Length: 309
Image (cartoon, rainbow, N blue to C red):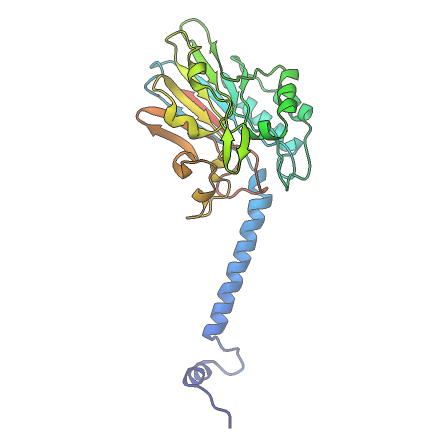
């Protein structure tokens, strides 16, 4: 004689004849299946769709050290990481076309022009991506600094490629730009983790005091840094600091992503507009990818800033 438990008797009584019974086990199995499908769909989106997107993130700022009523527009390109599978030549061309359409007064580039990691299965040669960046146009020029990937993997090639297309590279240097009465400084520092000297240990080539010592007028200063970790040491004399490197976390999974932000400050300088003690920092989410070719919750972006608007 077959014995049916009380729970199964209840299920059997409740289920209409000829139809499958809905049990707790079936519900849990269905939920697990849906979660698996959702995870697979999310992973597919992060690998194939979001990295191919492109957004313009806009800021309008009036920092204390920027002269009131003086308008300046700036386009920021960070972490291009040219290479496959997600930043091949057509995407680089789209970045340049989008940046030019913003018609900014000045364009700055914050380093990491190349993709060198396990999944970067197709390279865009240095002269090719540099030729595309050479199409950038702005009345006050295109100014660049280097990032850690440039130093670690192709220092000579990146420097040569930028020089060949006449894009000025600021390495602990400051330049005075703009017409009389509207001048400002753009100061670019060397990379802060340029040399790997041990597990989790680095030596930088940055010289913030030496760079700012070149600022010889009272005109406002815009600082370019690849990594945002320099920000606590930036003096109030600087009106605005730009940084990249973090990719905004790149994979922003709730509760988990801050642990993977490449900064000793965690999520403090991971992304966006940061104000500390009246000092202003903007961290770009960047364009390409690093470590893995995926983005989630932080699409590739060009930053557009209007000061004094």
